[in-house]
Image 1 (cartoon, rainbow, N blue to C red):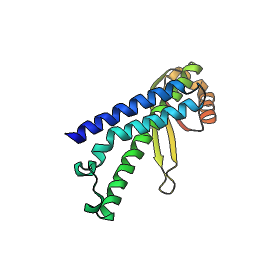
Image 2: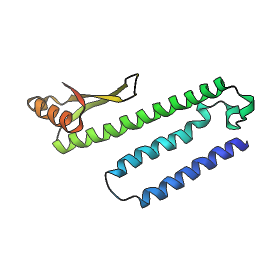
Image 3: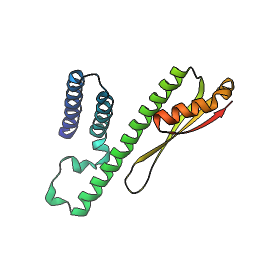
Length: 159
């Protein structure tokens, strides 16, 4: 029961701290990076009990071998990586939606697929768009603006 209280307290402290820092932070391009970092930090705090087994909440270094500690650290890192990629995908989706809205483009489907290479975990994003057929004549302009300005691979379909 004590570990649940500690977890709930941690979530509250993280929310209050992030809220205060968010109010202090100036409205610049740094704000987007901060929001993403805060989201990842908050998700990590939220997922920590699920990524770690129950005994790991009360961590006794002498009762675990190095392999146990490494395995748990790897699971936590994997959960954090997944949460980070999901936040990245959601942010990209909002940016693409905003860009399409600015261009006056009506889309019926928007999907962003993110893959990482095995070496340095750099994400590569592919945007799949299904647009209303009346935008076919603007195909190159749409592709150029989204791909060029956002640096994303764009696949466009109509229907």
